[in-house]
Figure 1 (cartoon, rainbow, N blue to C red):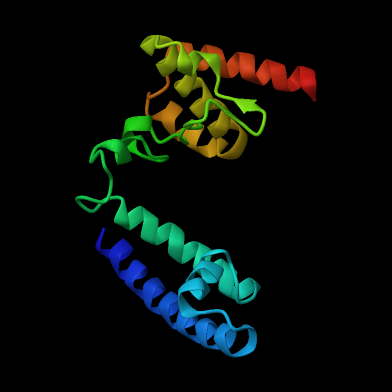
Figure 2 (tube, rainbow, N blue to C red):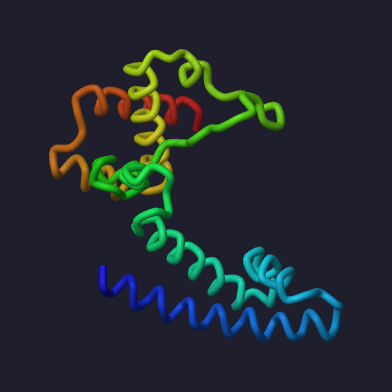
Length: 167
């Protein structure tokens, strides 16, 4: 944790310096006020190298900030973040909020059902599918640690069979 905090401090210093420099340029060249410059920086303004640094800094800051008391309205919600031991080291499932339909993409019916066991299973299957697609190495670690249930393994087999049939 100390290493993460040190790295976060270094990235904050670099990012703050970039914000100040970019704010000066944006004000002088484009008439954009410093408060708006921070939005430009957060959106990746300042060139490709700056954008990569800013994205890394923001991700790290978010990760560290989420662990600080009072940052999250529910202090326990970070336990459901990707890579958290509560998720057996797997990636997190998709999350939805209001409205129930966004840009033609509805919230899955199971999440609106109120059936907690089905919701829990859907979340687990989504987590397994995302991890299989993006980080199969994490599935291997979870499997080696005995963290995947027989139901998880059956779902992964079906998922693999579907991928073979589709591809």
